[in-house]
Length: 80
Ligand SMILES: [Zn+2]
Image (cartoon, rainbow, N blue to C red):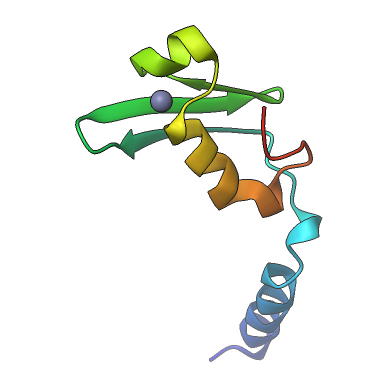
């Protein structure tokens, strides 16, 4: 294998272990809930989910789960 590519892979492993180097700015995802799929988005520090519960409460188990999964990549506190 190309030695420069090997060095890049080693550096990538080092970077991957330093999650503070990355700040999540936005994302979109489909969350497979127990009963149906939900569309989730994160942008400008705000979470959104297509489920009924989120509409009335501005948070839900889907966005909370996403925050937990991505907490190492987010600059903001875990809860929106
Ligand atoms: Zn939801």
